[in-house]
Length: 294
Image 1 (cartoon, rainbow, N blue to C red):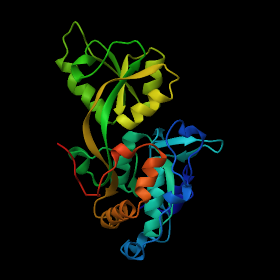
Image 2: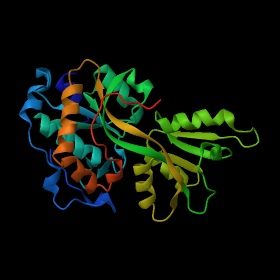
Image 3: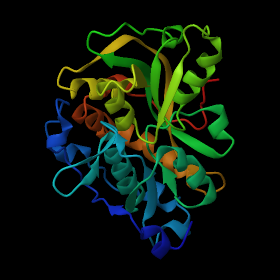
Image 4: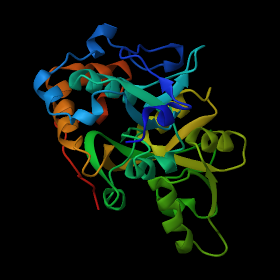
């Protein structure tokens, strides 16, 4: 873990009780914001390595992935389901956190290098990523395509042929497009347009600079719902996989973090957070470690 003074630069301090602001759009809201606040668990807190007790955990997230993480409100705070979950886990473990907005493709490598303590940003647990960090699972999601209203339907990778495909760099969505590209006929080439953030990929489709984009289903659904009718989901969700919190191997945080996730599942805080953001379909029954789907 880097020295606190170095890691604080550019960070946004997030209080431990974050409520849904106007940018939450049409997401469902829990009956009481207090229901998303988790109590301290002394046993779990006692299992956290001493070196993490004197300063906040530095959490890397890409705040372009609403409703999981986004920048919202006059204060430009980072909010979202992932942020509420992080805060609940920190409360359970007796820790504080600092949330830092980072390009997605730098999160796993940053956790691996020690620049960040945890990476929490709709990160799909994959075999390749597991070679660099451990993953504590906490959610699951499929993948969905979305296009401009009235555009040709895209329902499978083969339908990307002949299309300009907007993708976020460093994601499994980029990998999917890269794998499909050589399978397309020369008469219908697949053109990949890469962006650092998914919001940029979405805007490229709206602005007709790309024909289709794809993202995890909660993120795709949010983008479509907030596009003022300009975008539609295309085809059915596919390839449901676990999300994981990225943890440096050998850090000593993996086990207490997994216990904390299972604690907030058991005490109902987890369900209330998902209800708040309309994400109940992605709930998991228990947290596990390194559950990548090959």
